[in-house]
Image (cartoon, rainbow, N blue to C red; front, side):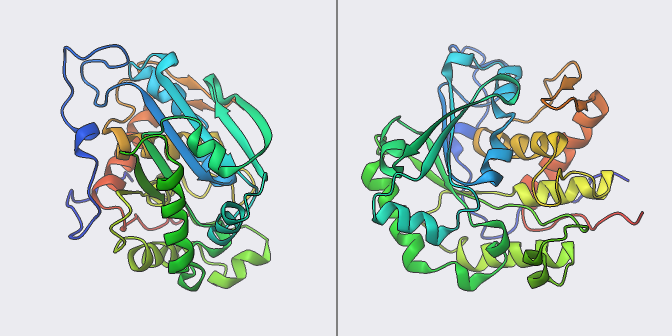
Length: 305
C-alpha cells in the first residue's frame, strides 16, 4: 500500500506562499541549492506546545540537506506544555513570563531558555513565518476556537513582529494513536479517524475562512497518510510523535512553507533516538507529504492490521 492519491487542490484552500514556494533560481545566493525551492534566511517561530516541538525537531536537518546554510536557519518554538489558544491569549494579554524559548539545532538538539514573555520572543527576531495551533485535546472541538481569542493573538503577533511582512500560519496537528489511554481521547470516542475528521472539520470551519491566516500546515494529514502505510506506529507515547513521525511532520512544514520536500536526501538519516529513516522511508514520506500538500483535508484511511 502506498500514499498515492489524486493530485487535486481543494477549492478554497488558503493561499500558498508564492514567493517562497516558486521555482528555484539556479543562480540564487547562499542557503539555496538548484533543485530545491526557497531562499535564505529561514526564520520560523511556532507559538505552541510539545506538538510544535515535535514538528520542528528535524526541520534544521532537512533544510541543511536541501542546501541551506546552517547560519541562515533560525527555528524557534515558544513553548508552554499543553498550551491552548486560550492559554496563549491569556499569557499574551497579561504579559506572563511563562514561555520556554526552544531553538533547534542539528539532529534534534534543543537549546532552551526559560521565563520568557511571548512578546519578547516575537520581537526578538525578524520572523518570516509565525504559526499558531490548538492544544491536542481541543484540536477537534470548534467551541474551543474562540474568534475573539484568535483575533487577539493575530493582532498581538502583528503588533510585536519585527517583520511587517510576517506570514501567519496554522499548524493543523495529528490525531492520537489508537491505543492512547488518556481520558482526553474520550471526547473523540477513542477513535483515531473520528478525531482526525473532527480536527480537519474544525480547521475548515474556524481557521480556513479567516483571511488573517496566510497558510495552513496539514501535518495531521501527512501523519495520517503515513499511518496508512506504516500502521499506527508513529507515536512515542500515544500522543507525541516518535522520530519517524517527527521527520514526517517537519517535512510537511517545509513542503508547505518553502515548497520542497526530502527528495534530495541521498543517504539514510539517523535520528536522535536511534531511528533510521531509510531511503525507502524517504520515498514514502515524500509521497505522504505531497499527498497532504495537494489534499490537506483528505487523509488515507488507517491500514487494517
